[in-house]
Length: 276
Image 1 (cartoon, one colour):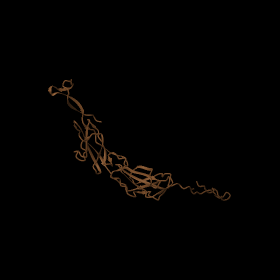
Image 2: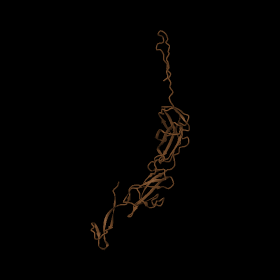
Image 3: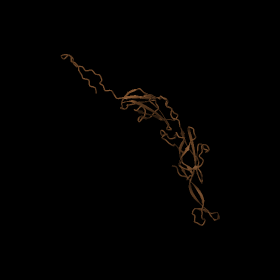
């Protein structure tokens, strides 16, 4: 925090007969004394935040998907009123002078994009210089087309514990997060997706699922979700069920022979096969 600045205010002493130190003047015009008053000012930029950062996902700093945002002002000098607007002349979407509160809500103009919000404060001694802050309003969900999820998309039969690629295409957005992809899976034909495969993936179009879970189900589906910086989300799921199956018990083939088949006659080989 920077140094606090003060201005000096001359005030009339109420009783000319009462002793006054550091007073000036006298006689019929009365006496005046000097006091230090903190300078009225806004400290730092106007802080703008998404008013609900979990709808449906947290918004990154500087982004919002709600037209109404939270405004925080840091002011010195005991302000009593404030004014907010979307231009430096305080004529566009202006609140007019309203009672000062450190934290308040402000409704942006009804169009997506970058918004500059300006603020000033005032009291009986005057008004401050203006400060501003910037936020991007984005109410458009990422583009996740139908059939964006390419694999698994239904009908696959995969072994538990094995490795397979989940692939997708067509995911895009102007304000897509740097690592926007989340993958989950269902074992009830997509009624619920309580099981997370991976989060915070790059939009690379592929992820190696390794190892597959140790489940035995014919009703598995995958959910792909893309999230942008403002917290908007879009999803696609497997078109139909696929199978993750338990490994089938079995014995690998092998050959056994006598190391000397002529001592004094060829030996027979009879090995019982036992499945495990």
